[in-house]
Length: 110
Length: 110
DNA sequence: CTCATTTATCGTAATATTGCAATAAATAAT
DNA sequence: ATTATTTATTGCAATATTACGATAAATGAG
Image 1: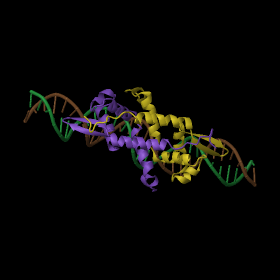
Image 2: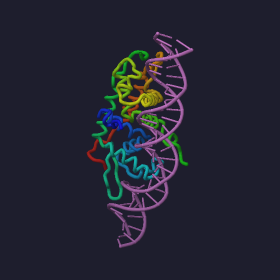
Image 3: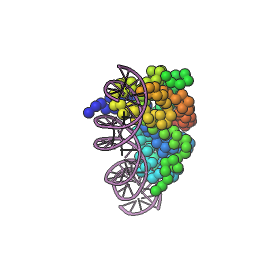
Image 4: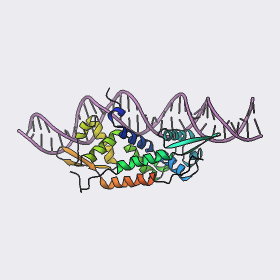
């Protein structure tokens, strides 16, 4: 067998694509937007807002938590999710650095 | 059956997640970085630079082209790829707008 | 303790992605 | 026309993702 992804690619490439992958599903974008909108955190309201089943939402939340974009506080029988500000800023800078790469200005390529 | 993704989610959510999905693979990040680095455009050099087979690279290039991030100029037997500056800027703004959403400043959530 | 509420996990089916060998398509060179 | 070069496409196997019903786990209420 060849090399594994993490060996072939640089840590930065893996980090950036890893975050992008998690952002690469509309339900997860919707979840993040909803968490941001309701400044206080939400839990199963997401199931209502977004039209997906509870296990599905739970799974998406898990992935968002895995990459550190959100964190969840257990409050009795409910779990209250919110943005992880440190990670969020870090991701913002990661994407900005990548997208601010100087693109050649000329008309066409070559 | 329920609704389709594109029906459930907003155009913005679909657009943003669609781009993120394409960025969600380290090889495609590597390809973009390489295209940006070699200011003149490259083609099969990517196969050399990145350790993947030619059909695999070709496929990744296709996806990048599908979302408009790059374009390819046919030059004889070779194809020369480069960043599509208009789309790139658009994507930059799309991500900036999303990531600049005001995150609640408070210590913890809830 | 029992019941209701909320979230997580398991199991599974459907679908999508990834990677590549084989091959086609297109052009350049001779 | 034949051959070499470069890229795209096809076909397929391996793997990953997505969605959800069923169920477990955890807590609060009575």
